[in-house]
Length: 614
Ligand code: ADP
Ligand code: MG
Image 1: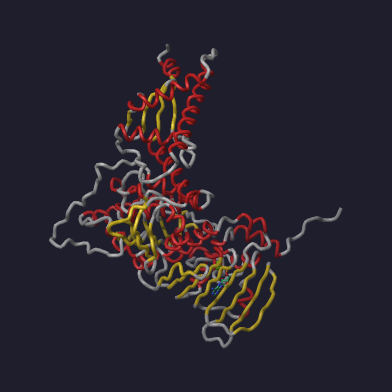
Image 2: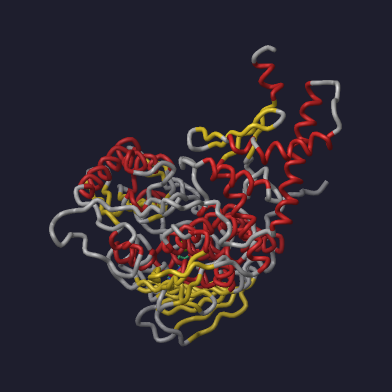
């Protein structure tokens, strides 16, 4: 028998390697931007088309490559960054495995143009599926430009696996931020489909963060700094008042490289301890610098987890550094929490030298369930739903009953009518709120418990979807329109969603760079602050984008419903509870929240009897 083992052709080996290095357009963005930084650039431009599916281009003004190096750069294990094994332990560059360009060229059409500083001419190379197509002299500017077209063009399974443009773009923005934040000494810009998403001039870390997340961060950031022999810590945390309900912004950089660390995250979160409202997350941007010898760099290039010696000491230093900063900050709380979300940044010092307790506006007549202002499902339709759902409710019980009693009693119908009357006449009037969280109400066969927040989310969700359907919803005009300044990426997102956002009842218009004016908000959100409301919507929307595959409207409806819903912890009046139950059963799917959690659970009297051993 002949031998059967063969070496894989390079193109195949490269494609396999590419699978590890390049999972999606964002991974190519990361590799190309890191190369640009390693080349010592002071300016890096990123251009993408169709969320990187059509084009990813990175242009830098770094050291450039010689003609031979340019050709070599596409070979596997070709790197200028390490020569011997010991170098591995002192590595400070972003790349060193020499795999990225070879991998990218295996699964895309790549054009490289590069010229070293001082060289007369540069070179242009075209690669396609690991094959060299052109290699010629080129009169290009100093530095390097790499264009990656039609990523995964020859790996259809991968290409089909890519998510929607908004999801892929979100990943690209994440990678862009992870490179741009720790390098404020380098100017970055980012264009997607000819729109400028970011333009970040050279500056300090604070300016960089404001450039990315908006000028409102000016007053939200608290500096953190600590120098020890083991670790140098520098960066910012966000004031507790601005903590986000969703994960928010959490960035650790170890020797300027983005890392994830649940362990260090815990250190930060615990430093915030009592300061954060429950179920909120701290936001932070923290640079840790350690001796490269003390970390295990033999980690996969696309992985963000790191192992380092002295983990416990770093935890302790980090925690105490943040506690110290927050302590200093607490002495001087900011004056007005809402003001900071606007265009005008107020000075922190009060004029008369006295700090006043911020006041909270409360509308005592506010009823979160009042629906007159916003026409939703027609009464008759609603009533139908309501009845039908109660019927279902009843029949669910009838079914349950069967499990306990073999004898089936009355036919459903007769009880049903009883039931309906019963419900509307007396039962609802005696709902009871438990721990400001659950509503207890008795039903013929026992009692049911409703989760107030989940139920309200369901109601709002269906109402919003309905408003989309009818393409109108009532708007409450604001007496004093407010401006909201967003980060470049959030601004692009709101622009993309503006039709839908308007049909939810927001009246917004563009107002200069990265800014919208909010003239009106959905009518049943009167006692919400318009800026907080829109910010919350964007925040939830982005979160959902990463977690689920839903279309725009579905996501917006979910996000807004979550945003507006009455939360656990709110005391409700008898009337509010009754309204909520009534509205819930008018929904087409009352039994679960938009994200599929139960809204209602029931207990039958048989269950109770059993418990009391009757
Ligand atoms: P690595 O970064 O791990 O060395 P890459 O495949 O990313 O591997 O790049 C291979 C080599 O190509 C680098 O070591 C570097 O010498 C060169 N190179 C890549 N991109 C650039 C760039 N933008 N400017 C200058 N040289 C570059
Ligand atoms: Mg590299």
